[in-house]
Structure formats: structure tokens, C-alpha cells
Image (cartoon, rainbow, N blue to C red; front, side):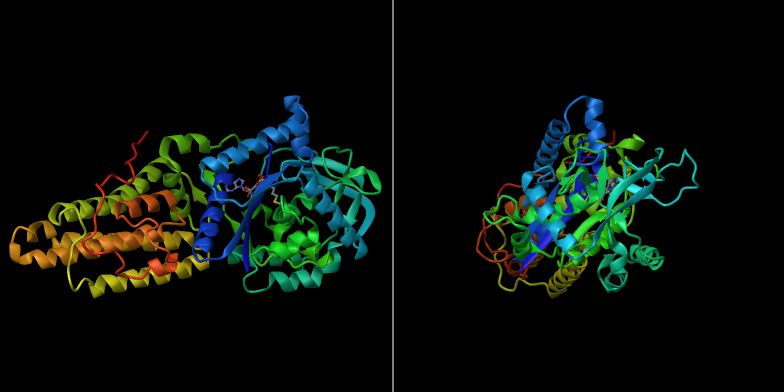
Length: 510
Ligand code: MSP
């Protein structure tokens, strides 16, 4: 069984902004979690390169669309490497392989008699690459997202018979967990209940796209083309690379993680296209919220972008990951505030987790000959129970993609252990020889808790997790699975500890 997870395929009108980093980090963390459970993961990301928006961007730069796409697509790959994104496939929709899959797919849709020629009239947002519902017939109609003027279109296009799939789509979107979160599901149910209208899947007067067979002046509509990237990605660079091969290797996708603005495409148009071609729809579509600054969506056209490269250089990958994954519930909007960011990193990572590890391993080294303590009865049942409950809750949250709550479970556990340490005060007890067994007991339980914290952080903060485990001499020290390693009590006794180093530096306010 494979677990296929996708980010949206990002438009290459510009290099990645924090919004695209956000979605990609979420998928990365889920992909890492599933791999730790031993699942075969196909983590797909990539770029959406065709359409009017990209053609115009290239022409403003006075370069060909292809060379513009090459440049921006490289910058996405470079960025994802810097952010240590563990993607398996990076699909470019301008690739020949992708065009072949689109053509194969189109033939299947034609066979189902779902394509016809018609006239498309309406207001178009080039930023969204989407026709918008009647905005008062005013020539200055604006897109509510991009705040840019809409453009009037009246042209001959090929249409897809979406209306034919009304019942099947209704059934699909009403399923218990096809659309998440729940509030978004209701928006889609409402929209579909008004009746689905056929939509155009080709454009005339647009060169930068995949040519529609037998219709020379038409290119495929960018969304019809791009959504298929999720399938073409699976068989790219494989020896077998047809539509059928992709499907056998990893379809249906287990989850598409996308922003709330493109939910309709993923929860309605895309499944209907797939049904028409006789292919299963994805299992789940999750529409996350927007990252805002001053309450507004971040985006190039709004000019309020927080440059992720600056954040990365200044604060490091793990700090940004923690803020985005732990502080924002997947599905809700999240406002990026500098002071809050610095406070969270310093409190959670540097003080609560970093200091706990640092002081407990220093005490152990100092009092037990640079080693973990050696003792007979090592388990404090209260701490062990807390750890096991933390693990259970963490797993059940992760399974529901509630990464913020899973992260908070780790933090709550670390806070509990800090309180335990402060309450027991081993630094006072050690002054009297008769307390030595108690001190060993306390230190062992705290160090073992740090090991569990390190393991649980693995899919969320892979580097920090690695540093914690190194400090405990516990990185890749056996062949046990991640789940087996989560069993309480596996930290060896009387075991050499490396010299403690701070695992994360405190951040300064600007
Ligand atoms: N190319 C289409 C997707 C095609 S998928 C087959 C597209 N691209 S996009 O680059 O404009 O947007 C990609 C994703 O980034 C969308 O899910 C969008 O919601 C998300 N975000 C864009 N700005 C965002 C924020 N400020 N915050 C969070 N995510 C946002 O749409």
C-alpha cells in the first residue's frame, strides 16, 4: 500500500512565498510521519507552468515562457532543498511526459462523450485563472482575492460536461471524510446544491499551453492540464510511464493538501474529470487556511509577502516549521507576527525542551561519570504513564492531520517533566549521599522522557529531533522501528553521554 500526498502545483509567476512554504512544510511533516510508520510514501510537489498568467509574466520580463518557467522551477527545487523538503516527485507541467498523460486522459474523457464545443462568455480573473460568478456586470469588476480587474471573455471553447456528474459529486462530497475541515465541506455542499454547470477546458488565443488534439487553435485550460500533474508525477522518470502505470503505482492520492481558495477545483471539477475517465477520485481533500499579515492574504499581487528566504537565513528552518505547524491549526488562518514567533521559539524550543535536555544530561554527566545513571528499578510509573498517554494522543492527532495538537502534546509532556524536575530538585538531594538512588531514578526518568520527546519531534522538526537523540547517544543505534523505539525504558543504563551542546539558539527580537 502506498500513501500518496500532494501539495498544490505552484504557479511559476514568482519564486516561492511563505504561503507555498507553509503548504509544503505541512505535507513534508505528514510524509515523514507516514514513513516513520513504515508506509511507502509518494510525496508529490511541483509547478503549474502554463496559462495566461505565466505567459504574461514572461512577456513582461521579455523572455520566452519556457525560459521563464525553467528559471522559476529551478528556484522552487532549490528552495525545497534548502527547507529540507523530503519530496519524492517534482512535476513540471511543461514536461513532455506530462503532456502525454494529459492527452491520454483527454481521449478517455472524449470516449465518455463528455466534451463538446460551445461559447464561453464571462468575467475572468487571470490571477485565479478562473471565471468568476457575475460581479454586477460592471466593467471594473474586481477579483475579491487579487483585487485586480476582471477581464471579459467571449470565445469558442471546448466544454466538459460537469453537469452530468451532479449526483456522483453530491454523493462524494457528502462522504464523512472526503472534504476537510468541516466548515469548508459545507461551503462546497452549498455550491453544488445550486446545480453544477459545464465548464470550458480549452482556450483560444493562448499559445502557452498543451495543444488540444484536432483543435489547432486551442490549448488546454490551465486547470484541466495542471490537476493531471498529480497523476503524471507518479510515473515521471519511471520506466513505465503511461496513465495506467501512474494509477497502478500510486493512485488514488490519499490526500491533496491545498489552500481554501482552490477547494472547488479539487473537490468538484477534479473528481468529476476523474469519474469521466473511469479513474477513482482522491480519498481526501484538505483545504488549509491562509497565512495572513495584518489580516490580509499574503501574495505577490497584494505586495505584502514575507520573504521565506530571509526567514530561513535569519531564524533557520526548524524555528519556522515549529511556528507554522504548532501555532496554526490546519484549516484555520494564521497571522504571522514577529514578536509572537520569537517568543514561541524561545519558550517552547530553547527553554522548555532545549534546557530540559541540557540540564539533565549535564547533571547526569557530572554525577555519574559522564554517563546515564545505573540503577535497578528505573521506571517512575507516573512519568511512564504520562509518556504513553502523550504518544497515544500524538498518534491519534497526527492520523487526523491535527499536527498542531500533536505538537502541543509534545510540549505539554516537556512542561510536565520540567515541573517534575523542579519539584524533585535532584541538585539539592545530591548533597546527601543517602539520596543517591533517588537522584539516579529522577535523572533516568527525565533523560528517558527527553528521548521520547526527541522521537516524537522527528516528523515535525527532523533536525532538532536528530540533535536531541545525538545528545543522548541514541541516533540510529539499532534496527528498531520508530514505533518500537517509542516503548518506555529503552534508554540504556550506565551509558556514555556526549558533551551537551545547546540544541537551538535563542532568537533576538528585531
Ligand atoms: N497552480 C494552482 C494550483 C494547481 S494544483 C493542480 C495555484 N497555485 S498558487 O501558486 O497560486 O497557489 C498554490 C497554493 O498556495 C494554493 O493552495 C493557495 O491557496 C496557497 N496559498 C497562496 N497564498 C497563500 C497564503 N498566503 N497562505 C497560505 N496559502 C496560500 O493555485
